[in-house]
Image (cartoon, protein in one colour):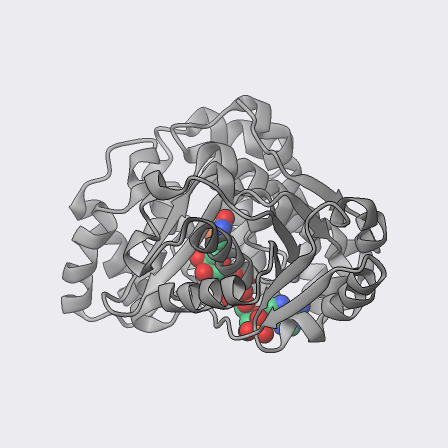
Amino acid sequence: MFYCPTRIIFAEHAIKHAESILATMGKCAFIVSGQSSARLSGALDELMPMLGKLNIASNIYDQITENPTVQDVIRGSKLMTDQQCDFVIGIGGGSPIDAAKAISLAAANQLSEGDLYSTDKFISAYPIVAIPTTAGTGTEATQYSVLTNPATNKKAGFGHPYAFPRLSIVDARYTHSLSAEVTLHTALDALSHLLEGLYSNQRSSIMYPFIYRGISSIIKQLPIVLRDAGNKQARAELMQASLYGGMVIAQSSTTLQHSIGYPLTTEYHVAHGLANAMVMEDIMNLYQDKVQDELSGLFNAISITKEGFISWLNALPFRKGILLSDSFIEAAIPQIMASRNMALNPLEVMPGDIRNILHKLKERS
Ligand code: NAP
Ligand code: FE
């Protein structure tokens, strides 16, 4: 099955093509962003005159931090209700856009902190517009929102059809202001999503053309962007690959490759995409026997060997290990085993498999 109810405008100056659809979203936009990227990327400066032209009022909530918290969401939901806004625009990376999705649901259903994962309480939602400024999460095409609860130090996602954006304005120009580090980490998140589209036990061959093209683009274009941050064509290819990754995980969800990264982010502050990348080779080896045909199909289609792919990955300038404490490893295992994505693995993953991968990370530190 393929399901994506989002209108996606993927183009240079995409916002110009969004005018007539934006006009139907509502009368007051609640704009959700981080502290700097909405401005730095140029997205906010292009959005505001368009809202003005359409006589749409707006309020900006620009306090979303990386790995947004349930408290950020509830604060936003109260502000949105007080300001009587009737749709949400998330501008930024996955953090503000995921927060915008959760704010829409929290405000529409008057949810409290404890309700944010109770999807049975999601009876309605305000329309969501997504304007990504990173090329990584693909959240502009998914029904997921990933939130952190500082009280329990747990990061987890929820998925609901109402969390799909109604409109996504995807313009790679907004990613030109990204640092090399965020460019690299977010591209590796997109690569994880595309690979997980082959690994997931919900995989579907109708998504393989997107997966093959997305992975091939990242292999070719990421090194180019890391050398030449302003390369328009290469940035556009990475943005498209990220969008494909979102379209793919919207169908198949993610797997252990994502679950294992969440505690690394909450405890050791490892960026989301970097956490996925650090375990990518180990996860591929763990799954290899179960997804041999899928991996061969991929590597044949994009004319690379598995060894060639692993060498390409290892040549990228990201951190390959982290000094984890044994007490962290033992506490993380049950948390990872309990995560939602574990139901999607291509094989039954045992606590010992997770322990092995975490110890390998430690050995590489
Ligand atoms: P992010 O946490 O949204 O942003 C990382 C950093 O990059 C922030 O400091 C941000 O600044 C900055 N930034 C963003 N765009 C920029 C730009 N154009 N120029 C300069 N700086 C920019 O990073 P992300 O990797 O995109 O999102 C990660 C989150 O998404 C995680 O919580 C992850 O779990 C989640 N995720 C969600 C899905 C999904 O389907 N919903 C899938 C995968 C991952 P500001 O603070 O100013 O914004
Ligand atoms: Fe991700």
